[in-house]
Length: 285
Ligand SMILES: O=C(O)CCC(=O)C(=O)O
Image 1: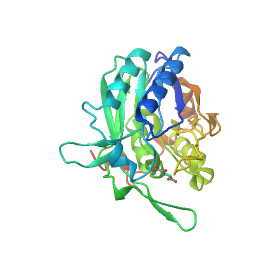
Image 2: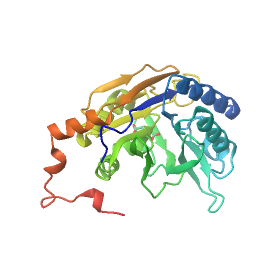
Image 3: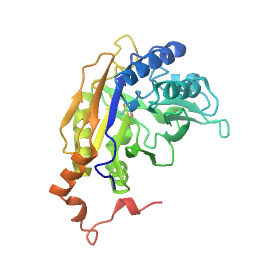
């Protein structure tokens, strides 16, 4: 797929402090995106639900169209002014055609064009007694498509938060040629310490691809306490960069040649036994 002439992609994850003020959240995202670009980032990622508090009652209230709403306009301008690819975290989207609300990631090229959209396909419905109960399906509808987009650095797959628990997404992305799987996400104080890093490392090592997850910063005055710890994992499963729970930015160079060398050295890709099990990347168009 990629060659040594493919340019190196400098990835930035922007861990934002999210408030109840949408305009403030958009302005805060913009200043951090421009800061990341000024440090040379070519691919910038925002957190899940970066323009609204995270909670089922907030989603319908904050939801807007992704054709012409204020958030997509602001994201497009950020990408254009940063001259970088922007994975715009996620926002509550209201689709005017069905009036449903989705948890949606919009993606922009360095010209500010909206090039891809991922609606979270696995809704976060869990109940851990005494710890956390969250039912996104109370107000959200799940998306129905997997999302990959092309760049000059290679093809990239996108999921949102709970989507990372379903290994098929990353497996399909890798087998369909993606070199990285990026997840805007907002784990919590129960499942964050247990699974946030483990899931990223698992998705990376199984698929020999880069994996990154970008969280909001933790706000103990908010109803939902995000775990933070935005993290970038290499194709060998090692953590390249991570951070604490506060607002900030982390960076890593995504080197395709290093990934390809690992794939040559440990060639599981050419050793699979599809005579014994299904190739999930071929199961669906
Ligand atoms: O899977 C988890 O533990 C957390 C998922 C989550 O917070 C989300 O999907 O927004």
